[in-house]
Length: 131
Figure 1 (cartoon, helix red, strand yellow):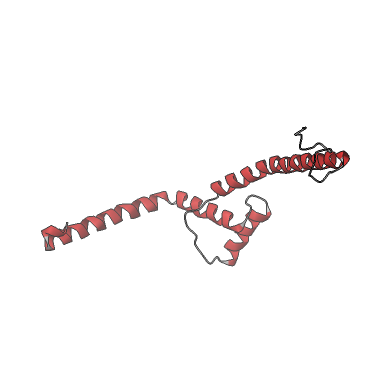
Figure 2 (tube, helix red, strand yellow):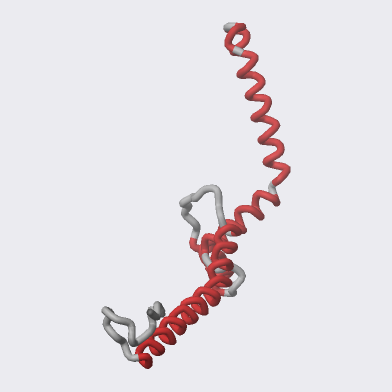
């Protein structure tokens, strides 16, 4: 007895014309090929989005009010295409402002260390076990 499942003479099973079987196989192959092609086409886009998100990750979000002049300057950077959005432009300007004021932040850090040392000294003078 022939065991080929595609055999149109197989007993006890509904018989499907060979042309219909061929069409179903071709349709399935076309569907798989189309799905694979869609997947391959989306991979670069997906990777690009993931990389972009990773590069744009910020550790915290800050809501701030800007003067009209500063807001217009931020908008100018976005309109010119330098940055994609206002948040990126504002983050850049804040970072650049901090870099420009490094000496100020260094002085503040030194004073904070001094304050911490004085607090520790006071705690120790009140109760030696509170180090």
